Image 1 (cartoon, rainbow over the protein chains, first blue to last red):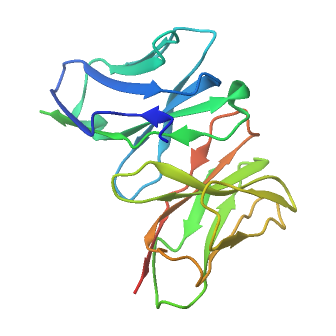
Image 2: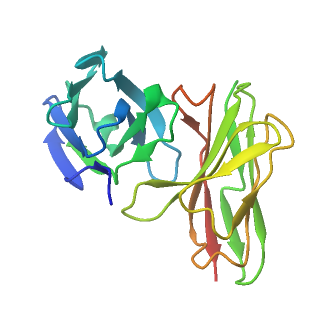
Length: 113
Length: 112
């Protein structure tokens, strides 16, 4: 049973436009959410997180939105750059992050120059 | 420079052999984790440790073993009992379980 779902395996956008990566979850106990970026043959790097007490968190070009009623979160990248091309993983945890992280399968983003 | 190191980056073994993957961190983090990634899959938790000399099984611990004798080191042994050992293995650490995890560069293990 997949508790964290990233339904789009891939996404392609033009440089300078907005990239929107989506993530859905089923476990209502999740209250802490993270996005990681991963290049091939490298470890994931932490991008941004959000607690369930917020509905938005922003860090530079990256913004994460959380819709608790829909059990949905999204990562917006504006403007997209070719260096953003990578696989993006959504992850969730319960009890303020003290429970184990559950990862989605990832979305491969390609930003075309 | 603080970080997590995993060695080697590529590892080849014959079926039936045990192999140990190294993970070292100098971030002074208490918690350490081992994940496995297969093509088209998310990261799956193998083992984790919150403190020295203590560790817990994750979702897919069968065929693996770990030790945590030092705060900075968390080696993973892939035993011959692991049915599908060929994968990309990632080690991570965090200040404690409430904080974001930082990952090492990974080890690609190929067993033939």
